[in-house]
Image (cartoon, rainbow, N blue to C red; front, side, top):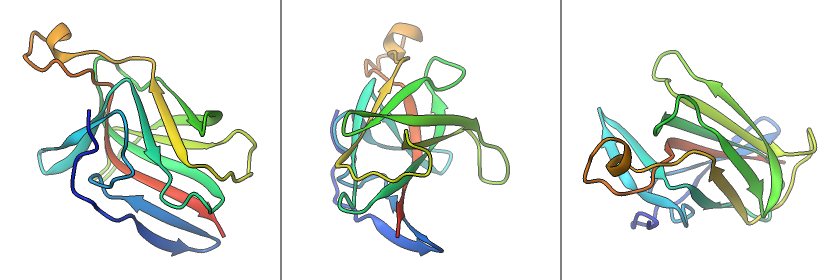
Length: 158
C-alpha cells in the first residue's frame, strides 16, 4: 500500500464561519493504508485497506468535521468503520447519498463533543470489514479492500 505518488496540494475554500479543505485523491496526506488512484466510468477513487491514515492538511487549525464520500464498499452492503483523531475516538455517522452526481455513502466524522472542534495531526480509519477479491471472487487481485473513496473534505472552525 502506497501513498499514490504525485504531490497534489490541498485546496482551501472559505465558507461563512468555517473553512473547508478538499484533498485531491493524489494528495500526500493520504498516508498508510491507501492504494493508488483508480478510475471507473469517469470517476476517480482510491481503495482503502483495512486500516488507513489521512494526515490533517492544517493541523494547527481547530477541526470541526471530516466528510468522506464513498463510491462503494467491498464485500458488504454498508460501510462499518471506526474513526479517531490522533487515536482519540471520534463520532461517525454514515448515510446513503443519492441525487445528481451522487451515489454511494457519506461519512461524517467529528470530535465526540458535539459542536466542539479539535486539533489533530491525523485521521485514523479502521474498517471492520475488509477482504480480498482473490478470496471472495476468485480474482488475481490479492489486495485487502474495504471502502473506495471519491472525496475527502476537512472543515475547520474560524
